Length: 357
Ligand SMILES: Cc1cc2nc3c(=O)[nH]c(=O)nc-3n(C[C@H](O)[C@H](O)[C@H](O)COP(=O)(O)O)c2cc1C
Image (cartoon, rainbow, N blue to C red; front, side, top):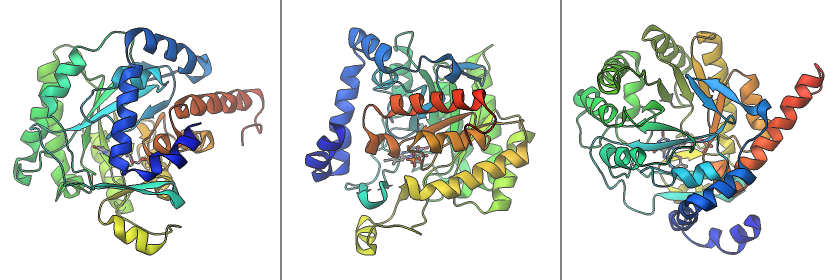
């Protein structure tokens, strides 16, 4: 039904308009009685799927990646659709409008998206107010923070720390996003020398604001980093006692697309997401696991759209997986399908050494 709706209606309207319509429905799904019923139907219930990581309990390993619910408006509805966790944001210390529209494009031949949203959001304080009001029993919620566009790069650490302070009390975990291609200069902060002061400032802000509770801290990296830079981020994360890394954000590469070049060019600049990103995202994940051993929790993102994709990431060293684009193309039952498929794989793997390979 969703495929029919997509073919007949959704693909004919601008991607951001379709997103807004879907988003309104998901918010409605979060109404108390409705959410309970949906969660009962769609939520991960198989004990084989449960994950304990970052000091938190996840009912299933498949989460929603950052960017879909930037302002933490639909957490209850997204939890009701069966996501094991939801990462809200990116939020910035100050509210900002993002880039002019259009800024989100579909490449259906690749089941991919190109976006240059530019961190449009109401600000970290507004998201914190909404999260403080959320009802008990919802999903695990991570908060992804980024740099305010107008903040100069040499004040980045203080800007990130301001966001961290605002969300410390309401986030189950916090992610420092230094990997969006849509804020000028942001990805330069991935260089270890520039990343260190940001991560140190955020860790201190979280510790000062959250009191006795230690808020898990992760950093999210781009797939476009060269391999030695991936290693350097892993080493830094271990050195600073970070909890984990999210690999990866969108790519600026346009290699290997099935979409005609003119259509790709028409979308313009921005980050590419979806299956074309998968192979490099998996490579980065493997590299991180090899480098960091078991000292970091790795959350895989980038091109995950089937249970097999998710299974491959889990076997490559991810503890949890996230997606955005797979959910857009897969529709509201996508989280349920993912968890059901993973549960089958997990059981098959348990019942015989070669069954799941
Ligand atoms: C429209 C759109 C907006 C996004 N916004 C953010 C964001 O604000 N912060 C962030 O860390 N990642 C953002 N992302 C990246 C996703 O969280 C994810 O890392 C990336 O899309 C790769 O996963 P996917 O192939 O499953 O989409 C965005 C992705 C899309 C498609």
